[in-house]
Length: 69
Image (cartoon, rainbow, N blue to C red):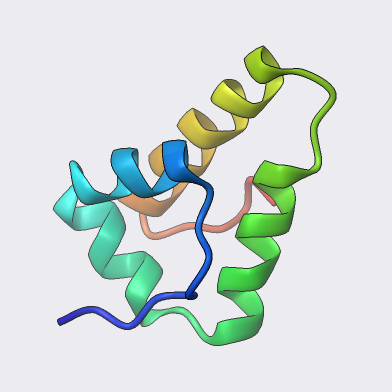
């Protein structure tokens, strides 16, 4: 079982659950890094921006990177 932050934005949680590589890397991050990713996704001006940030986060995590933050 992966350890993850308790409250994930639903769109991020859905995309993360569909990508095992991204999920595995996310689970390996410490709580502060996970929290920073959630804040990055939640800090947006529109639904479109939120979707773009989720896609950026998944791509980064899939490549074992958090440089998108």
